[in-house]
Length: 65
Image 1 (cartoon, rainbow, N blue to C red):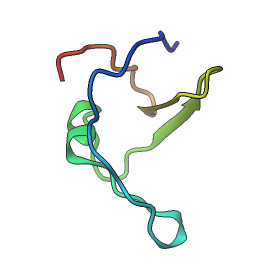
Image 2: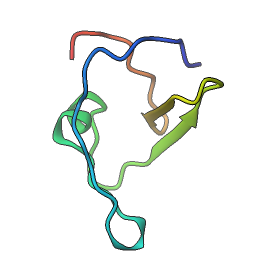
Image 3: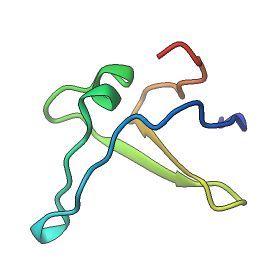
């Protein structure tokens, strides 16, 4: 499950396009080892932080991106 951690750095930005589509920054795709067709899971912590992970994958805790 999710372990609280502090954000180390911003990994990029994205924009919401028509129909709710968005881009995923290259750095995020590399950190999560994303490929076309992969599913992302979105979580909100009790303090309002948003966590995104690759479906079926594990959370990324490492500070060494």
